[in-house]
Image (cartoon, rainbow, N blue to C red; front, side):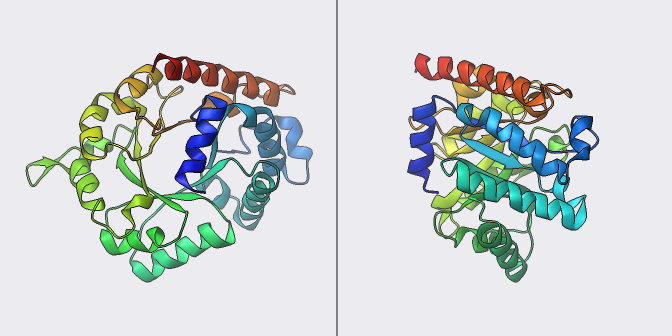
Length: 272
């Protein structure tokens, strides 16, 4: 998907919501466990209930890998369902891959060609030759981990390197990579105060922002410091939406939560 197509969907739906599909058999409604494929049944219902309020879906790959072949099949069915029924939705493989060049190329083929995701999250620690294989794919997006929402982010990401925080060095260096126009970045909502400085380095790039909702991030602060003329934000909510209820009404309640966030986002957009 081209960036312009994503921006068009955001403006059309008045939403920059990304729904995280962190599907856990220990948390989904018990009645679904009787289904032939409980993971896909859950995902399908969540997608149908939330698709009008969001512009992206982000399956967390670990939640599928955990179930082996069955989990991968559920993931494939989920992506196929989105591609067939809601092709306007931007898809993110939250895989956090990152390895030497030839291995990265295989990861890229797996997620961009075999599974047909629009984007993938990447850990930048191994540097240029571990990232550029992903950037080589046309109309696909590589989402680098810059400043994450977890407490452990302060262990390394904010430590000084060459006189500035490591996450800033990641941002600056990544801009020199081949096809850097295909880069997006992960910045946690719980680190909203950092967004002003981040925007000085990458003023127009899209940011994937987890941490609004269950982790306590502020949507208003994210918008105040991170929004661009083309919005430039994908704000993710996972648990707060998909596990809004564990009863028969789980999809309906997920839809209500997604609609509430969409309405909050519309208000933020109208301010600007």
